[in-house]
Amino acid sequence: MRDCLMWQTIITNALKKQKELLNKATEEKRGLTEDEKADFDKLTNKINEAKEMQGLEGEVQNNTPAPPSTPQAPTNSGSGVPSGAQSVHVKNNEPTWRNGIGSVLNAVAKSKTSGQMDQRFANAAQGGNEVVPEDGGFLVGETMTKEILKRVYDSAVIAGRCRRRPVSVGNRYVQNYIKETSRATGSRMGGINGYWVDEAGTITASKPALGQIDLKLSKLAGMYYATEELIADSAGLESEINGWFGDEFAWLLDEAILNGTGVGQPSGILGSNAVVSIAKESNQSTNTIVYENILKMWARAWARGRSNSVWLINQNIEPELFSMAQTVGTGGVPVYLPANGISGSPYSTLMGRPVLPVEQASTLGTKGDIMLVDLDSYLLIDKAGEGVKGAESIHVAFATDEKAFRFTYRVNGQPIWQSALTSAKGTATLSPFVTLNTRA
Image 1 (cartoon, rainbow, N blue to C red):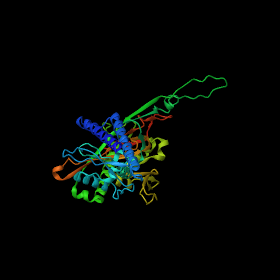
Image 2: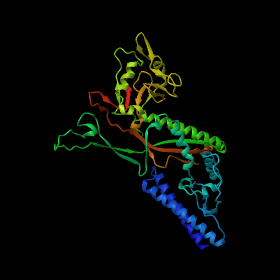
Image 3: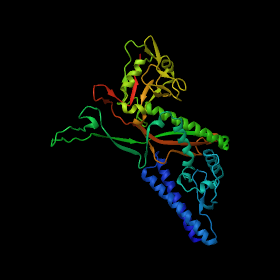
Image 4: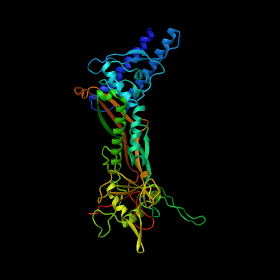
């Protein structure tokens, strides 16, 4: 019995220290530092180990197998801060979250109003599902919020085609790259030079020029207020949260990839020094796109990236594309091939590459209304194994009988190319990002 009390004391003290870490961050209006996160995780491990030992003590005392015991939900003192912790035994065949994240949020709300933690939280082994002693808050488990992240990349037209890399340590991604601005001899790979030499001829050494991408994670966030009535309908709540937040995060991510400022958000393609902009034709009318524009855009697209490239367009330019034709003798042939029509493809095509209408493209007649891009040349980073994180607070909007649910996604991105590339023969620059200038 004495040992059981000892393990319970360890659990209570660890919960208290977690509360202190979170309260300090809240008072300073910031998130946990990397060191604080590490301390928080160590305390979680200590809690789990103490739970396991409690269970083993119970088996010895009862002389029958018993599952590990876990601390019961701390009771709410009225200030929103749990005032204590008690052990409870939970069956190994715990109930499942039948309605996904909706069931989780419903259980959170009931735990707040009743002061008793749902057994599915109590039996959770991972820190993401533990009760968090900060203003009565809960973390929403990763297994639930990953559905939102899946929806983000299912809904996003652009983000899912980028080169995505996880950040496993810290909050930065550092990568070296070859700093190449010209394909002329002596400049390839930033300075590598090869030679045809005679027997015993002299070879001059050369080396590449290296640059470095140092990209820090930014945060995409959203807040949701759910009424008690909607929380009671957990299936409806899951549908709303997965749909609305997934679609909204997808839209914002695609918008940032094209038009982002790079300040607290990804750097956009259109603002990159690597973009090649094609001038309008002489005497070209305002708000038009002509076949010559398409030919010149294609000619400036980096040849190695063409097979992976797509056209991103604003939907309002489609009438221009449908009326475009290549003159052949006294007639002509269409240039733009509609989806499932002449192209025989699920996508419309232009120069054999898919045409994807996106809301984030500029309106007809302005720079960015049509772009030819190889999105594998855009780097997108996010936190490894984290995905979308969710948390809940009972105190916000208390007067209107609502709960506040917050969701955050740590992500950032930028073009890998830092400048356009001068071709080996000639003076024209090439790029994986080509657009058409404003036609005013």
